[in-house]
Structure formats: C-alpha cells, structure tokens
Image (cartoon, rainbow, N blue to C red):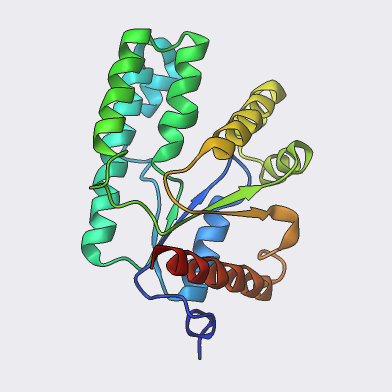
Length: 222
C-alpha cells in the first residue's frame, strides 16, 4: 500500500504549492509527487520571451510579463484538469495578481490603466465557477529569518545580489495575500515541521495531513 492509498487521497486531486522565494516549493512539489504517484507541473522559465526584457526595464515590460504568465498558467491549469488531475503544481495562478501585479502597480512600475486591465482579465478568466480551481493549495510558511537563511544556502547569484529589503517586503506581501485568500481550500505548513531534504520519510506526516484535510473538505461539500 502506498502513501496515497494509506491516507485515502484520490488519484485525481490537484494540489498547488505556494509560498515566497526560497521557501522550498520545488522541493515539496517533487517530494509530494513521488509520494502520491502524481505528475508535476513546473513554471516554464526558459521559454519566457519577456523575462530578460522585464529585468532590464520593469516599467516597460511588467504588464506584458504578467499577461504572459496569466495566459501560460491558465493554459496549464486547463491541461491539468483535461488530463484528469493527479498533479502537484509548483506556484499558483493566484500569486501573480495577488502579489506581483499588485506590487508593480503600488510601486509605480505598472500604470493604473494596465493594472485595471490585467485585474479585469484575471477576474474574468480565473475568478469564475467555470475555472478549475485546485482541490488544495498548500502554503509553505516560515519566519523571515528562516527563509533568508535558505536563500543564502542555495546560493543562486541573482538572489544573492538582491537587497534584503526586497525579500522582507516579499515575505510580508505573501503573508497578507494568504490571510485573505479564499479561492480554494488552504493547508498551511511550517517549513520547520519537516525536512524532506535530509529525511525523505518526513514527507509522510505531510501526506497524512493532506489526506485528513481532503477528507474533511469532501464532507463539507456533501
């Protein structure tokens, strides 16, 4: 009996992993997919035609980048559900509007007209009964200090050059976002409660929580 069967998790669920940079979304996505026998869905960064332009000029390209992300994530969400589910997804479609587009607007790197246009398009595409929302969004959380330590440990050059104030702001924006999020059920996991890098067996308590959470959610729907 595998972990999915042991904890009565359906084979067609869609689970999305959310959280700020450095919190361990990709690691959790891979570990959960292995434990559940699910497929993974990752963001396709290499084929993004706007990223380099965006980093060179935020104001000129922020709207284009957000529209591109919205279209790609929307298509991926449709593909996952048309496939029949059984996926763990790294990063959600909701973070783009709730955190990144909003941040660009508030910082002045996206005009009000562009932000209103983007937000209207997002709401029409995603915030409707017809959009296939995930069965569960797992929010990985931790203290600002713990997350900064993880960013330093993995040593990505671009992240090391980013001012610490940016990571602090991003941490706060994620906390504000998740506290008002209601598009689908949420399971919050503290990054100090497991260590799947050092101990792969620590994924089992996470799977147990997911199973219990989904069972309770199904009871409420009935």
